[in-house]
Image (spheres, rainbow, N blue to C red):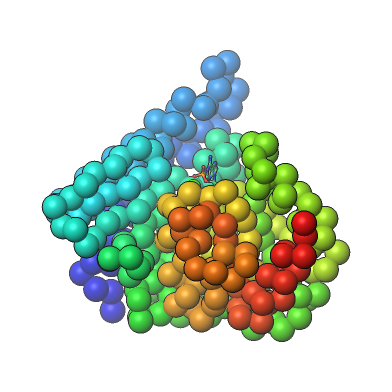
Length: 263
Ligand code: 2AM
Ligand code: CA
């Protein structure tokens, strides 16, 4: 059973998802046009944020709002804030790769209490509420994978090339981690990575240089699926530092050690 709050979040995410789905169908046609689809995708992104914003505002007019596309509203309610990525996986979307999601988290005080991550193409709706578990499409209760050895683990990460120190450090980490594990994947959508750690598809995820809306929705999913999420050194605050490590407790511990050994 979803709470009223989670229902509101699902409604907002699915409505924005329908809009993105429609636009996603158009992107392919635009690939051949001279101007390219970049402007079109920016508009799709902004439209999705507007839909999420309107839906959430209608239902909870006093809550604050923080969205990737620039919507930042301070509500009169000092306790609650929506943290939203209307299109996580923008580059995938631009290239007609169906790995992207609408991601919404609800912060109460200084903790995340509800999350929705929705991929409209795969029709995968991930939801979590604090204390209520993590779910896929309301039917399947999620549990992180139970592999015990890093050598058997399938990991996921993000590889960014903005030339920041964390991006260069990431390349060094890859050189150390790759030979130690069963495989490494990269989806291009941080919220998808975290949702897929929660569901056990991936054994662990790490990345740095992320924004709060990349991390907040997936954080609760991982926790409610029995996983551990922190920064790469095992400390809290991943949402705000953008430095993230998630997995089952054992793999999380092993990977944390390995990542920290990379100087
Ligand atoms: P986006 O698709 O919403 O931009 C991939 O490694 C992850 O990094 C994606 O979730 C992507 O989100 C995110 N990302 C891309 N550019 C970013 C930036 N400038 N700062 C933080 N995160 C970013
Ligand atoms: Ca994002």
